[in-house]
Length: 276
Image (cartoon, rainbow, N blue to C red; front, side):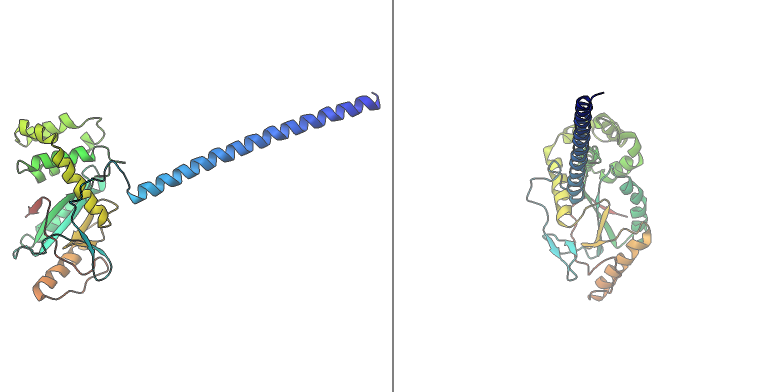
């Protein structure tokens, strides 16, 4: 092979090598671009989700209750009236998503708390549906409010929690909820009409907006006389805050409380109330 042929062969090999390197670089940068795009998309999703900013859920009503800060800087749920019934000095406010498994688990705990304080505690239930992960939460809340129109709010809530697995994954819950209404002895025609009542959806949106303004970012979230408490997973977490509120009511002076709550303020219930 002549020197000229060798020279040409080396040129071809060099050109081939450069072509392969170019293709490898192109593939590498393409992969980096795809990974970066996915990472940015995932990061933005997390930001939106953690902030609880779901434009389809936050109501447009401006009638949500005002929110103020306690002396310790914690959010408290305020209301137009700061007067509590003399025989019910403590209001336990719960923001809940009826499709939420954690809310289902807390439901019997809340009932046990009310059994411990039969003469002093009222449960003020408020809706906080998180439809981004619980698509049937809003229909469930509407069903509860439709039952409330016939005086059976908590009966419907009990049934919805009891059979959460049966309806939570249904593409449409309407027929299932109507069957529950029949089981509870509700007027079927009125219940169906109320399911389509836009005012019930607006009420739920308003309560959810109120929760957001009060710093609620997960369910269930509880307040004792307007002061947010930590969910301990058992009755003792509620007892500390309730006992402190009762002590304050008895003495007329702020009670010393655990780290689970701050100085309580009155919270006149605006949602369905359960007195046991």
